[in-house]
Amino acid sequence: MFLIGSYLIERKTLKKTFKTRNIALMALLIALSVVLTNALGYSFFIFGGTIRLALGNFLIFVIGMIFGPFTGMISGLLSDTVGTLINSGGAYHFGFALAKALFGFFGGMVFIFKTNKLWTLKTIGMFIFVFILYSFVISPISVAGLYNNKSIGALIGIGKLIRLPIELLIYIPLTFISFDILYLLLSKSSNKNNYVWCLKNGKINFKPKKTLKEKYKIKSGCDEPVLFIEIVEEESTTNKTNEV
Image 1 (cartoon, rainbow, N blue to C red):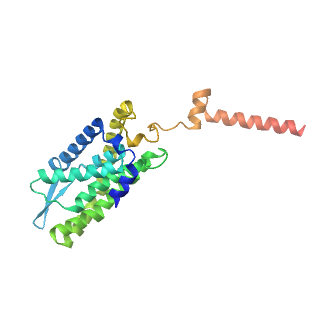
Image 2 (cartoon, rainbow, N blue to C red):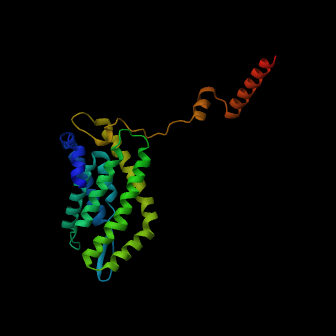
Image 3 (tube, rainbow, N blue to C red):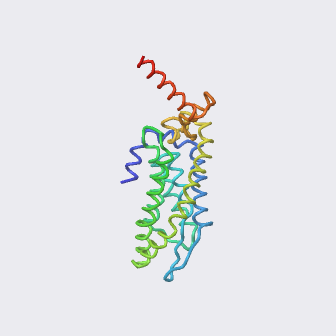
């Protein structure tokens, strides 16, 4: 359902998305995701089975942000498939493949709106939502089904609850850093032939807008208290004139 929906969203721009430069960048990010998940990931033993924790999911989220939800889902499925093939101790399970695909899907949802305003908050919200969905729904159910033991799934959920704040504090900054670097590279070379999902509403503003106080200080070089005194004096003068 998610895959079909994301395809319908991107169907008009897929030809422009799957160009040589974009495909090469997707392949690089997928490879990095596989390495982070399988080579640099970490495992622990529980009830005679091995549970491996993925570290490369945030890169699939970034792919979705840059190239769109459908491309993100495809990248997630490819990443999980390649990871399963090179990891001799792992077994393929649809639940884990679905989790990676959803990271790509919700990454693309950051820029589904008609404006790029509040994109940082959207990124944080989408990532937290899909990470919680993965940690407390998909992962426990998949592990319980893989080992045919519901208690394992419950223990996985408890463990993820303890690690949740730490993992979010690591993954969210890494997501922003990765996206910022790739955005700067792509925005300079983006054109009609190389479509980028995150630029469909124009360029993204990384700098916060200046407040009225900051603008006033830059313009006149005075402080807010001076401005307040001037207003009060002007109002009192006006009142005196009206009384006369």
